Amino acid sequence: MPTHQNKISTSWQGIPASTPLLRPSQVLKETAISRSTMYEMIARGDFPSFIKIGRRSTAMPRVWLDAFVASCCETDSDINLKGISHVG
Image 1 (cartoon, one colour):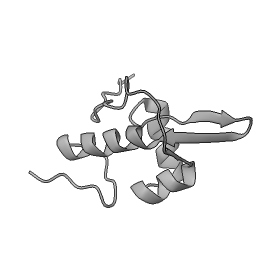
Image 2: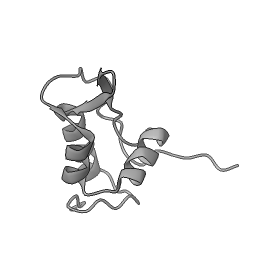
Image 3: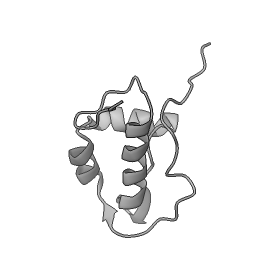
């Protein structure tokens, strides 16, 4: 069975969660990826996960999303995100 190799840096790991927090709909809007793609990427460890902020609420610290976007700009990747392009 082939193993998955991360092509995206996990640069958000180790960054403390802080405000502002983004709800899933905000993250989807800012990255322009589909909900299913986002959750597949989270499951693979290629995208920051959400944290529980209530019994039925989740959010992502803005700094984690910013670190993810920065890593996309620094890394050649097969993952195509609208609005995020690799220049180089």
